[in-house]
Length: 204
Image 1 (cartoon, rainbow, N blue to C red):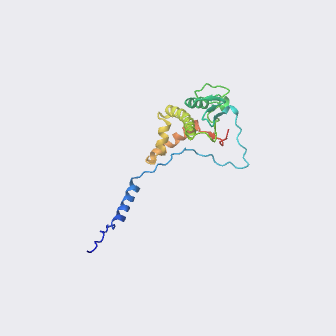
Image 2: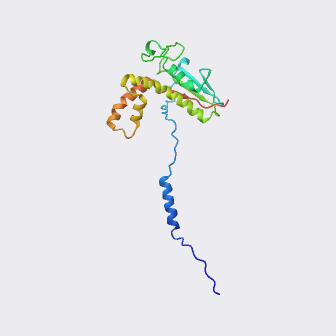
Image 3: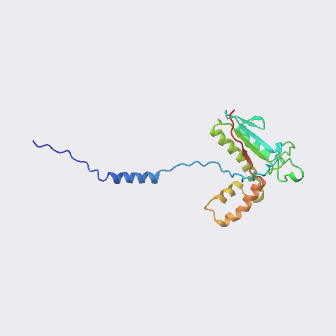
């Protein structure tokens, strides 16, 4: 009796199918990217340049330890209170004479910041601070600047600074509108310049 040969599977189109599947996944798959933190680093100072002298009252010190606890100006604080504490510091307007701030609406406490131009927020994290807390603290500090910038932008231009800034940075915005927004954005940024100093993390 003659033996039957096993039927062969036609694999001629397998390569085409695999190629089509590859194309399908390449087209339909989205890759998430981290948004990151939007920071403009200061320009390099000449090596002979002496660093500016800062008065201690113009520095708002925020320390985050390895247990994600906040120490603000030497006092324990909650994350939910950080934004308002930073706003109070930046908007204090305690300076007199050339350092006076005529648009600040703070308490004008002589022991706190003189002027938003002089005010610096100093942030220091522990090496074991969680990433979640690190980002949350950064967000609250940036939000404090946005609160004040929005207030001044509404007073001067009747529009939130955050809306103007987003439109200014949007590539779809016409260049004529960008030219109109640029001086307004720069004017508000000059009133409340974002001076956020981040020290090297420590281990405690």
